[in-house]
Length: 264
Image 1 (cartoon, rainbow, N blue to C red):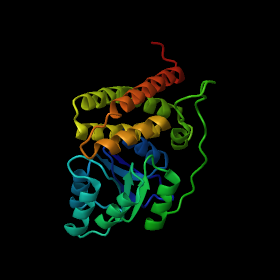
Image 2: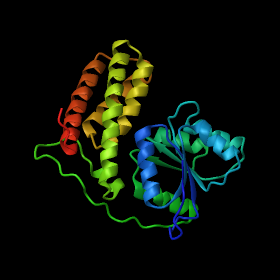
Image 3: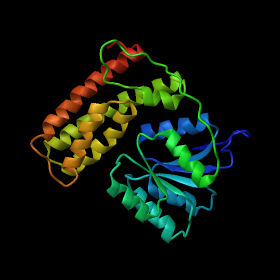
């Protein structure tokens, strides 16, 4: 999907190629670029990103998720550097913030690194530096008010992205309600069947969505599950962690129902 710039956009001459496989993250990025009148092409994995560049279409910068199917961000960037011989700036986007992941991204040929959920001010600061196209971002306007009791959700990040667009916020909450419960069951089944790789993959995917809605404790637990299972092991604590994530998810869904005025 391609979005055209407005003539007066400070970054109107910058064309972005954005590779992101998670639907909720891609939708947020699309909204951010539409709001700012920026020209961006969105793809779902590294292989599609490579094909866009191979086609001869002009891009000024690539925003590349790391963990994607078919061809991940590191593989795609190495291909861009070694086979396409292109020096286009590539910015890594990852749910990991450790130095090892940053080192791997640099070795793959990436120019910079941002963690998800993406801090849009930091991201555009990097774009400014790599593409010389400065832009100031207006302050976010809060939309939703929380219940008086301590909430599980913290929508401040989503609100900072939406810049007062309540329709977009509601749309993102609905996507969460549709996508995450099936993923929760997938994670529960993977752990029950001792499928560590599947458990690691699903917990990584869910973690991004939890962070998007500020579900901090749930995101921390999913990170723990991912770390514990990515080496092929499921510990005796993993089922308890999965149950705790499930409980947090149920509370989150109840809060979303309240915010959207849904009666079940």
